[in-house]
Amino acid sequence: MEALSLYDLNALVRRSLEQCLPDEYWVQAELSEVRTHPATGHCYVEFVQKDPRSNNLVAKGRGVIWSNVFRLLRPYFEESTGQAFAAGIKVLVQVSVSFHELYGYSLTVQDIDPTYTLGDMARRRREILKQLEDEGVLTLNKELPMPVLAQRVAVISSPTAAGYGDFRHQLEHNPRGYAFRVTLFAAAMQGDRAEESILEALDAINSRADRFDVVVIIRGGGATSDLSCFDTYLLAAACAQFPLPIITGIGHERDDTVLDSVAHARVKTPTAAAEYLIARMDEAADRLNDLAVRLRQGAIARLKQERIRLYQCRNRIPASAVRRVSSAKLNLLTVCKELHRSVEALLARQRHRLELLRQRIADVSPEKLLARGYSITLKDGRAVKDASALQPGDVLTTRVYKGEIQSIVKPEK
Image 1 (cartoon, rainbow, N blue to C red):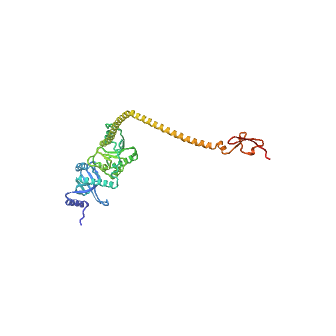
Image 2 (image 1 turned 45 degrees about the vertical axis):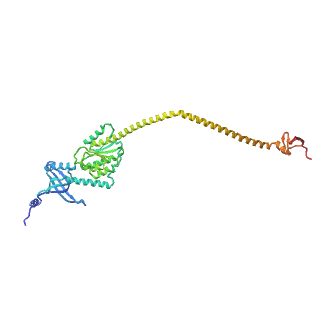
Image 3 (image 1 turned 90 degrees about the vertical axis):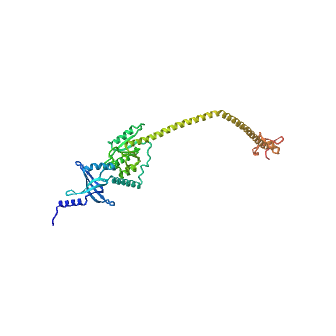
């Protein structure tokens, strides 16, 4: 039996693959690794396929995008999708199959279809929004009342971003001179740490939420391919349930991110976020001015009404006074007559009572008693009430109805 060397066997495999798979093929896969060689500009990727139920790997393959292709393919993909060409996304790529005796099996990428990735990104957004809706938190932040005067502003942004400077400048130079107090909570607004740092900033704001009226998340400039960090479930859930209204101005116009969908308000740019806050202040100021005008007009109208009323009252005073005086005189005459009648009635009752008393007194007078046959015995001008108090020889006077009788007390025999 003739043995083959490993090289010969690999060469046989290469020739067989070239004969069996001579064309280019469109392949659906997920990028698990993306690495660009700094010197050559070639991009080396790893494609994987996972079982949709268990999420276990069922296929894997190495791929390469040569620098002359990658220079065109990458900006085309990122401009079309707004998504960075990075690990974790699903792609539809046109590849040719190759086999190298030393490096083994690989796929050479010739083209890419951004619409497939856009569809997958949209599907993931829909899934996240559906999950938030099922959990009952999707619209919580939108339902928060926006403060009438949103002047204490917590900003999540990169401190060196031009958008943050534009935001500050717009607020500080507003035409009416409104005073805003802006506090920056620095965060990475792109890259692998973006989600984590934004969540940390939200936690820091939440720990002193009573000091702020509103939260503004801004990202000025930069590539639209860096927006994927705003399409994560954790960040969306945190913003949806945040206790303060959130305004997003992350510098893109094409599509809303998941973060835009759950925020209280979404504007296009950091400058637009500042204009939104200024417009809220304008609305409040206009309402106050309108109330001031209405108050002034109402006060003038009320004063006019009161002047007319006062004038009418002044004109009615003389006639009213005459009527009141006449009425008082009539009442006084009526009262005098009633008083006179009352006094006469009272005097008549008192005369009758006195007459009755006089008659009763007359009926019990000593003269009446003497006329009835009674007598009264006096000693020294005092009535004798007890016979034992008399002494022999006492002179008594007995008074009868007609005359007096003198007597002397004699001793008993």
